[in-house]
Length: 527
Image (cartoon, rainbow, N blue to C red; front, top):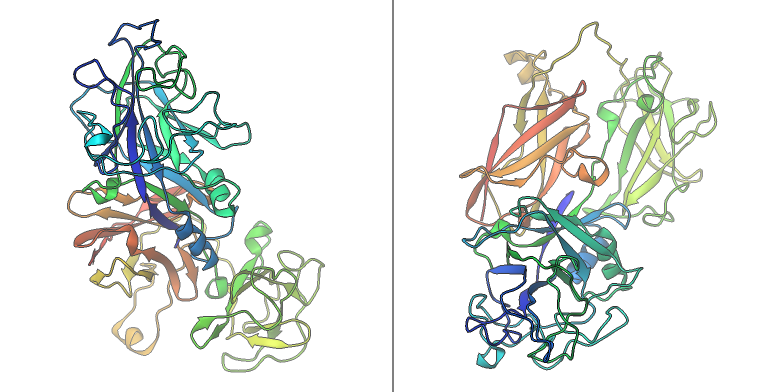
């Protein structure tokens, strides 16, 4: 998997806005079970009363929290990679409504400085008071029993939430032009702090940036004079931005933290080439893998340890007379590059990425040898001898290729449980290879490995894009397919989909400097 979504486990909206009578503020209101979240800044509906420091400022702020425990468990179990190899994005989705929508503004996204209670309030229109049963966080209090407390992170005693605003604290902004955009912000730094425990996971506060929040006089923190942690300065209104909440009926509109990483494995034992003077040095490298399964489970080789393998495992190449022969003769001399530091050395240094998975890369320039074997060892113990590797000369046609392929997913099922994940195999056939009845019956057709292939998932009934083609760079290439001697493959986490729905898989290949979407589509359902 290279994409996993973590759903919010608490969210609410807190306000200091006037209730409908325009006399009292809804500072006791809570919206913990509402299906939308809302942030706004209103200026000028009431004239400021200087004797009571009651200003015209009316604000709404969003509090939202995600489960760090689940993320940490997934990292421990190697579901998501280590820090530095994964990005975490906060994703929230615009909720269309009948009110006005502000344009050209920024929202502030900051870590909340103390724990808070989600509550059971529902009403965002009437701002029903907490005394009517709405327990949980509100403008004045973090929970039904605990007030917002001042800290080194805020400039005043706290109402409207307590936020971490220190110079070393992660802080983010989201920019909106039309006002109808979704929110998608890279919050990797903050999530890594949560996982490490260096910042307590009290969730995130989302509201208009301090310069856009309406101005207010500074006075005592009372229900009639609610002072902000940070005094705003705007004299215009921004009303109103709404996002779907975690309780929304729309499964794919609920807020998530999305983990993205480039999880591609490039095992080139089925795509193994001799070195060529026409290729760059990096393109002449071949990468192969060893998967050490013990009783069906990936396990570290004795004495190597997990994820600390560099220099602990070696690969040497030997010649062989046929597919079924054993390695023979002395170790082959290999050119410098990849795991070969010194030219004409015989041991390529390998490494490990996950428990029981090892890899090594090297160039091979002995073009007179048609069958070779890779032996994995540590200079003392031989761990494994590979099946035969058959290098090919790299093809260099005298024309510009524009390939059209035939695709099939060889193990695609009609329906998947949305509590499972599965590895799907994409078989790609070059149309220039046209099998006859005889060859189909007597031989196994070799797949064509696509170096850069991406997948996308849409909901079939309305074409809603669930997982887009990840064609960016680094961790943004999170839908890249891996490949090995059996062809391309990818892992799909079906917990990203709701049940009882049909989805469509499509593929795009990057070749000759162009992205080309393939014509074949594949449907599957979830239960």
